[in-house]
Image 1 (tube, rainbow over the protein chains, first blue to last red):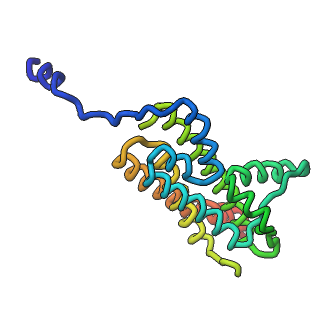
Image 2 (image 1 turned 45 degrees about the horizontal axis):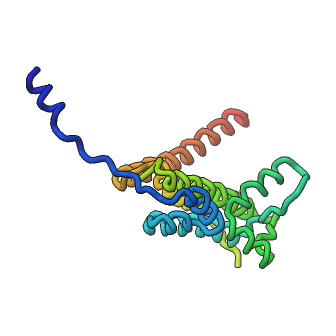
Image 3 (image 1 turned 90 degrees about the horizontal axis):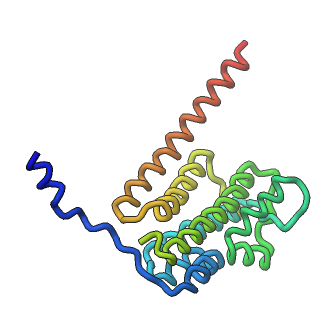
Length: 143
Length: 65
């Protein structure tokens, strides 16, 4: 009994403390993170996380394009096409670059092109998760 | 230039990058992130193989003469 009480009084391992950022960062960091994958984390001085996110999202997007994946345009057609656009636009700057340079035409005669299309959509969705994470760091919810 | 990946290599590449993002965004400390990355990656890859065998099994029993 006494031993149990004594062990309860021992100092616990210090939990990582969340840094306090300027209130504007709660909006700026996710916006930058959306436009430039990992950019929000760089802005919040988390360069390793930012670099890993940037490499992961950009590599998935680039591999999707190399596999002849399709980049969706804004549309009001089939529901899956609309959702494809929603996923794609999550990649932010990468999506705009793809549209400007006319990448991602899609090649329906290739089985791997379908994988490429999914890679591009998932890159966008992962980028949205990263931007939300940057927001959580900025508001102090996460260290 | 067109990159041609097999089903399995595409699944592994997908699992690798998705696991990195999941680990960074869902966990707070570095050791937790590393553990979560390994867990996610294994779930993705093992799940893909299990799903493949399951579908092969279903196909076998459905098309069995």
